[in-house]
Image 1 (cartoon, rainbow, N blue to C red):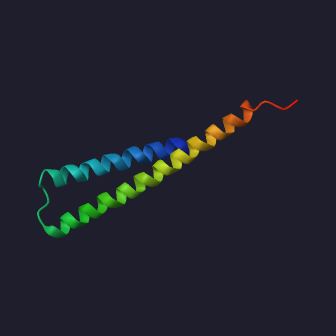
Image 2 (image 1 turned 135 degrees about the vertical axis):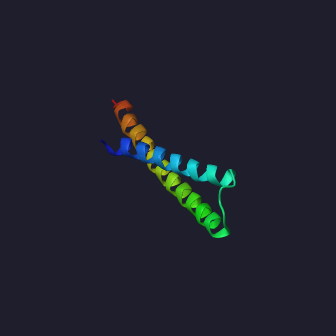
Length: 77
């Protein structure tokens, strides 16, 4: 498995976990304030992880575009 596929798989896993926590909070299934604060903290951490993954994927896309543009340059005569 190459790095890009790994990032996409990790991104999906984190989003699924984040959705599960969000559903618990939205449905009012948290029984005390400490658990609520902990779960909100988890959501914030997962959001940071997703942002970093997104940045890595964006950097990869930009690098791929730059690599392709090099081949499109026409030599000067």
